[in-house]
Length: 350
View 1 (cartoon, rainbow, N blue to C red):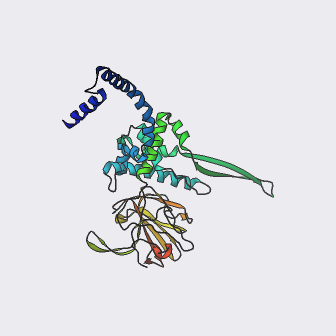
View 2: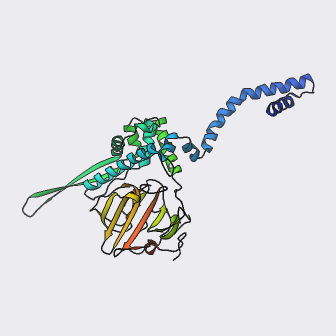
View 3: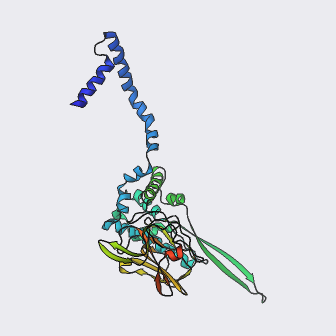
């Protein structure tokens, strides 16, 4: 009963246990006044306390967000929902890129899709389907047409219509769904929670920051993420000596992966241990990505340097979201750091 005794002592101190009746009465009045004002003080402090809570704590209380991310090895339901959103983003990007005159697709933020569903479905992931996710993704797309006509020397007029697509802002999408006020604010909170929980890339390995210095004609495929978790070459994996044919870069789920080199997409499919694989080839070279969550460009697509080609994930044999990069020169496998620059690479010996 230590807590009870402490409470009695505090009460006695306030009441002045051994003093005169008048003093005890004054202290009792003060205590009663304090108790009466306590609710008012608490109401005044609540907004300040809420504002002081870090966004990570807000995200941590969301069962939907936690269940959706599912950690490095998501359960079956989390994997299903992740796949629904990634497929929706992939479908919209491929369709818009295929129809646009400039071949530029619209890349919808999968986190916005998840946040909206968290609110409109009451954080019940069982109501999420690939069809519903794609329909939601299309709400973020705006189609534009501009027709220009010219008159030839023969007096005949020829007209051409240019089609472009742009990304619609979040607010009008929410308005179209009837999400306003507290619901709209909750969507924003969910997006920030997802961003907060995926801010630190997961994955095993050496860690450390690497500063890319790509050769001409190359670019780093995931700008802003430079932690190499497993370099190219021999390593010990699960107690066994193993040759690692690429470079593993720690990135959050759904990170946009860019074409590290211009070329033609020669592979865009699921390939066993590599998971969702995508390869870009050009005369004398090739780059290949593994473990993607979504493949944005089909085989035969001509991609420019730095163009979005996939979203990172953890498909195939993978311990967590990361990007595996392989590079080839004249058909021979080479260390990716030979084209990205080796200086400062964690765990790498030139």
